[in-house]
Image 1 (cartoon, one colour):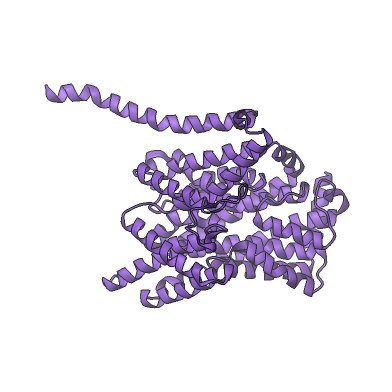
Image 2 (tube, rainbow, N blue to C red; image 1 turned 90 degrees about the vertical axis):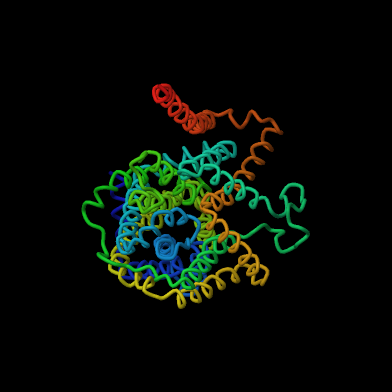
Length: 506
């Protein structure tokens, strides 16, 4: 009952005219920032912190603004993923796999509207989870140490097999290439330069923005130019612009499952939307089995990552508010904003600042509803991007991509490296290698190495720490099961063929 009373007080804060206007502005800015590849929610939130101070916003209003931008960026990131096959940020990588094929089939409007609905459902259910279980989940998240996180990252890499389809070896090759690229740069422990070829430009490693825009944006530009040269027509948005009731009912169970998994993964500090969307996609593909058309425009393949991303965004707020630990890079920036207001997040925040906490939670409901109402009617506007001819679309993508990469370090080397990575991505796509495992291997590789080093430092080099806890043991058992099951399926197929072969000879 106390929780309900606090939530009503929170809505009293979130529904004031000033905070409603702030949430609306934040969602609009976030959607635009998310639409531009390479910027992402971290940059969007960081850019608005000085604005919040400049206008003298109180802490609850400032946090409402930043959280609205955060959610808006996640919504906006799916637009370029679906329409252009260019992830707006890392988490929306999985949205490309089925969203872009739907756009190529003339269903861009359906894909955009269904993804917006799925993201809304995921965020709505996760916000309910915040209201009901935030303190309990925060205590559970403490049980995850470096060893448990390492096992979780290995599980995510193994889950790539769920996206392999009929190309397991190619998936393995590009995933290992991604892991290799994550090792480029200075070793944080020893200070040794690894795979830098004596170039100071990659001493800090290959930037994610450079890699993702090179692999997807530059390679897509080359494919667009190739199609233009051969006289191919641009992708057209035809038919209806909105999903129907049957399609929503078809993916409802996917929405519910991925809301739960996305929220739980979001609560884990540092896990983030990328891991949530990857696990959600691979899990749903396994559950679909032979009936699925994942990678070819399956509605479930679109709904799963979008729901998980929406849920994980709200889940990321839980450790920030209850433990004072950022759940993601974006919430780390928001955590810094709170400290500027002399507010210390942690277990006492719910008692000391109930107006701030419950106002933020209530604003998540409001901002998600605003995003749904704003995004669904805008589907027609977004799909106009597809009407642009390739000769006009390619230069526009080049300009946006160049700005996104140059903004990272303001060096021409990053631009040249992006072009080189783009040519590699183009060749891989022509050879039918999937690009998403490469990017996921790159993202997870850094986290795996960091957590493995921390775990071994805690245990003084004893490997036993990696499987000592019950959580680690359960995760490793799941990893072993995922590795063994494909072998068992292969053995059963061969066993089923053996009796038929002698009969055929006779």
